[in-house]
Length: 173
Image (tube, rainbow, N blue to C red; front, side, top):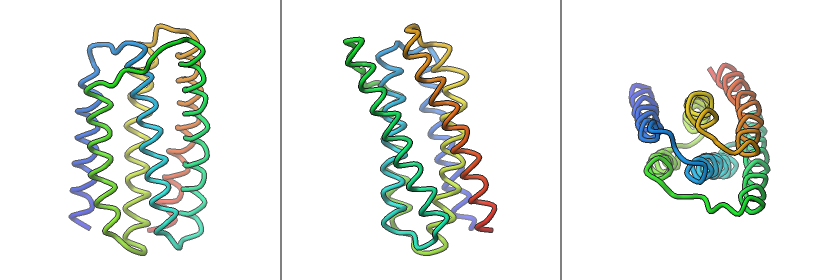
């Protein structure tokens, strides 16, 4: 348990640092890449959960994460194509992907209830971090109205994800 808490704290700190790197107001192409990367990260985590969990509630949550994040990412891709914008890889998106790869490797070593609990606790922490970044940095920094609107729609959906993850976490205790 102590290791799990340390791991979650380290992941949150890495994510905080990742978003702090973008504190100098990212451009719309950078925002698009950060948002898309964050969605892909959650889809990959959901796929891992769907492979590993035997818990119906965790499975339903993971299915919802996969479906919702894939849908938002499809909308994001359609928007950048429409706007003729090329998403720009940046320090924040790279740091997010690196931290997520490390976390997925850790989760991959867990089984049963230990996996379920760690996955859901990570989802709570991840959504809090991403939602905070959307509210305080990405949405205010977005210059294009359509990008800003997509981010705002995503935020509402992801706030629901955070609440759903908190509910599942409470049930797993």
